[in-house]
Image 1 (cartoon, rainbow, N blue to C red):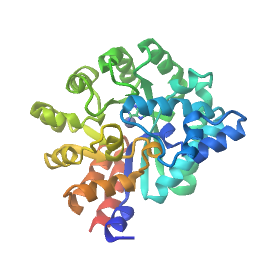
Image 2 (tube, helix red, strand yellow):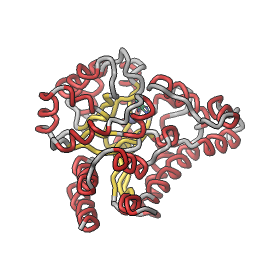
Image 3 (cartoon, protein in one colour):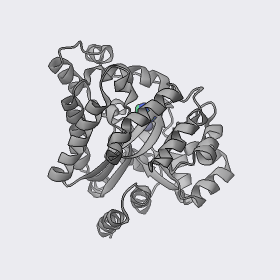
Image 4 (spheres, protein in one colour):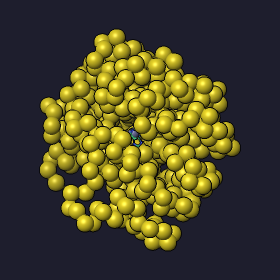
Length: 337
Ligand code: ADE
Ligand code: ZN
């Protein structure tokens, strides 16, 4: 291992932007299809006949592969296996805390009960806490290309499992699906005591407008992606003042936008914004935490101290108790000495 790679590998890390369905590696898709006696999804069966792998050029073309692959997830054991595989991988990269997105509507709309999804994910987290000493929690995302009524019904369905879910988010296709469409859903989520984050994907048609909506109308605690704030100094100031974390995903950016936004990430970090680096959908974009940090280090002039600052930001904006935060920051400080 190079000294850069071992520096990154050794850092205690938090991952705050990770779609659990985005961790479905092709081998696991095949295994689950075989176990459930269903056909291997097209995107996976065509993968073997080409050497180039998945081809995406934007968020829409990525989602067109991402959702059909989920057909292999049917039982709570399937959800458990997917989540535990991710947690084991993250643990091997020294991720000590993970906040994991899941998309219940992508499963309930296929007839898989909410209880099946959450029980498998929850069991994996319990096992990772016990056997790997990891800390992890769940963030329930609403699919923005579906109706606000369906989102509200999903919120209601989740209430019996409230204690298993730390907060709610908004993901899927942003085109023509502004955050304001879900204002009532997020207001209700807040009333229920959930923390709130929303995707503001990179270089969308209405990126700035959507970022203003999540800050002013939805009143988010974090923003997923959101680096387009560099275009507007007043937004940078607002995000800084409110200490809103941005969960950036360089490898994912490089696939869906052809620009990994390293300069923007660095500019915001240096301006004092609570920027973090994460992996998004690592099986699809082929980069877990270490690979995302490595890309940032290889392709920008970021210093080692700034890489440590990215991790400090992650622990600072993580949705954890103050006691845990102190402990994790202490681990990071003793490693960084
Ligand atoms: N769902 C999974 N990954 C996503 C992303 N990067 N943006 C929006 N929705 C997603
Ligand atoms: Zn995402």
